[in-house]
Each structure stands twice: as C-alpha cells, then as structure tokens.
Length: 68
Image (cartoon, rainbow, N blue to C red):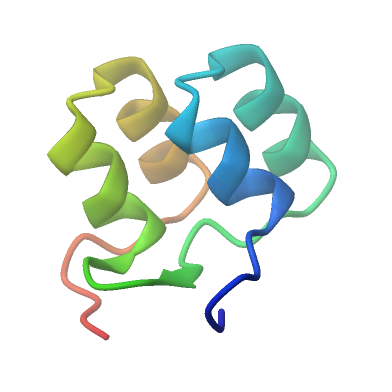
C-alpha cells in the first residue's frame, strides 16, 4: 500500500468496524495485507487494541509471524 492508498480492509480496521472486516474477509480480502509503518494489517489491529478484529484476522489465516 502506498501513501494515500487505503484498502477497504485497512479502512474498516482503522474504524474498528468488526462487521465490515468480517464481510471483507468473507469476500476474499487478504488477512496478511501489508500496511504503513506497522508492517501488516494484523500488527495494525494489535496496536489499536481491536481484539475481536484480531481474532477474525487470525481465523482468516493472518500469520502472526509475518513481517514487512
């Protein structure tokens, strides 16, 4: 993701929108998406403290050991 580009999944994560995150993952969004300075969408969620979204991402196949 480049500066100024925010995917729908990233936007949903930033807003803590669990329902939207679930929908996007069901539709095929990448749970291992790379993002800004934190590296991955999973690390972004962890930093923001969105535990329910963190669980959704891990259930969808996010790799906790994946680094940018």
